[in-house]
Image (cartoon, helix red, strand yellow):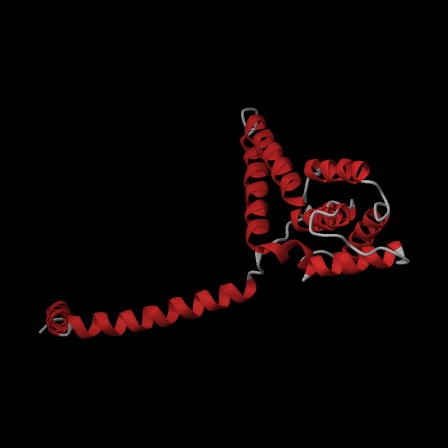
Length: 198
């Protein structure tokens, strides 16, 4: 017998064995696939933070603390303010751009620029590819190269803006009257903000 006939005979035996045991093989592969799928999903889920915590977890602690203190000072300035001033500040907060909006608009602008410039030199498409990759990374992990710079500028997340807005609404009396008599404005601001965090 030559090598070719030996290989053909071995393949024929293998095909026959596979055909006879295909249900068992499918079941075994299905169990292995389910195990691999579940393991991979659990691993990825443990590495991907919840949406509301992605940016703060990827922000330097000093920067995060500075943003929190600025929010406390913003609230402190309105502790004894009248409703008209608080209303004005709430409207300002409604118009404040958050981290996501700034990243998305800048990424879109850079991606479009890369596409436009690629008509002169195709290498500019690398800019669009890089920006899209970083935007995807930010969407999944909450980090991209621009994030540290943006956070150092004091740009807040939507959640941080909403927390300040909710505290101001409490001060305005939207959720009931707050006893402010004899309370240090800064302490009250911290107390109300910490309630929002929970």
